[in-house]
Length: 384
Image 1 (tube, rainbow, N blue to C red):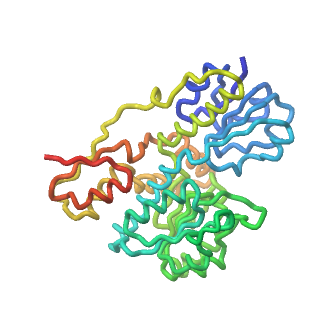
Image 2 (image 1 turned 180 degrees about the horizontal axis):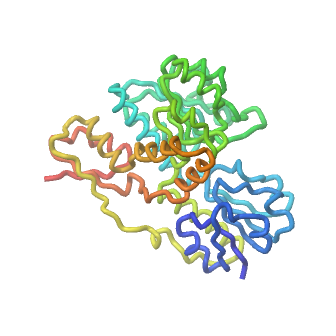
Image 3 (image 1 turned 120 degrees about the vertical axis):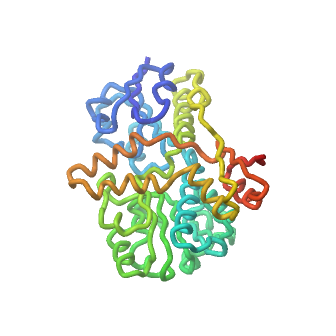
């Protein structure tokens, strides 16, 4: 039977792959050249750099990453070795879109400003960006889309030049990390673009840390050109810039896509590809790994403002402020301990379900919030 090395922090991965071969679950830092030397397959997360250093001289024939991003994988090297590679595009797109919804609603609650009629600029309109666009429309925002590759491929005028996003109140980034070609995204938002943004605007980044120039972002936050930023990803992570963390409204440890639903969906996509590669019939299904939970969200009768109702429901569905609070504990730690803490927050992340699993109970006086909640993905029922 094939030997399959997996990252043990991937939910259900051992259960899923056990019938394909001998599964060896390892911690992220345990995935070393020696550990994978005799493996036939390797299943990783974004923290593991998959390249010649890791795989040269190994027997690995199949590599899967349970992520939508692939910048941690040297695909050219894998191709040169004839190693099959699969990723999980779109697997956690709902999760990231819900993160952005929570971020926007938290900003609104903290500033006292409504989101209606604010302008949301979206850079990258793939699986994630397209769902973020629906979030923006649901929250009453004007949405402007920017995606040069899609603009060229489709000729669709709904994809606008980046210059048209500079007047947006929010710009949110949903692009892969690339360093070459006409659409390279490394430091896509460096000093020039950050200064071109509307004064007082907010930058949101849930893509990859190096898409934004850290030093330039610190500068525009310090001098007040941008009012704040909301960051889930960081240059140099798991070592992050604590000065930047202090400067942003919300900072989280690269967990925007970490819903259990998204993780299991990614595992399913890689698992099914592995079954095909090893010519075995799939036996595992996501349903067998989903825990039962209390899916009802109750909003007190006294809360009748639809914005407050939506904020309360989203906070119960996903508490982004808890993730911010947990990450900020890094600010009290010695530098030598910060990397391990960041990795621990990701590896031991709590169970988080996507909104479609949750049922919001509304009373007659609260019905005005129903269209927004349903637009965000919640199920809604009328209470007594």
